[in-house]
Amino acid sequence: MKLLADTHALLWAIQTPERLGPAAIAVIKDSSNTVMVSSATTWELGIKAKTGKLPEALPLLADYTGALRRLGATTTPITDQDALLAASLPWAHQDPFDRMLAAQALTRNLVLVSRDAAFDRVPGLRRIW
Image (cartoon, rainbow, N blue to C red; front, side, top):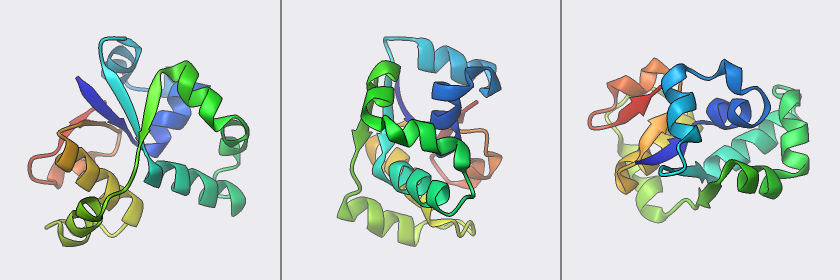
């Protein structure tokens, strides 16, 4: 299974895995699955850490590449196709980071690992927690 980690799922998988849902723990730990991390997540972590909204991200950002490697995760960039879909999704949710994650999950046929049930309103998106 190919997964896309939401920002909080990535942070918790690395720092406090006990905060993840049981299904999320199982799929992230399963080495036969591929864990992807969006460039939007990297951007969100950086912005929120710098503004003080997510200070717990600072240790992760200090060794971001190493942390992803230890988790077995790889990054996926934002493409024009992702951006166009994120802008046009028939979804009232306004958070640009969440809209991008939804678009990337859809364009790449990824299962989104997120506790946020708002994603369940995106047609065709699969979420696990």
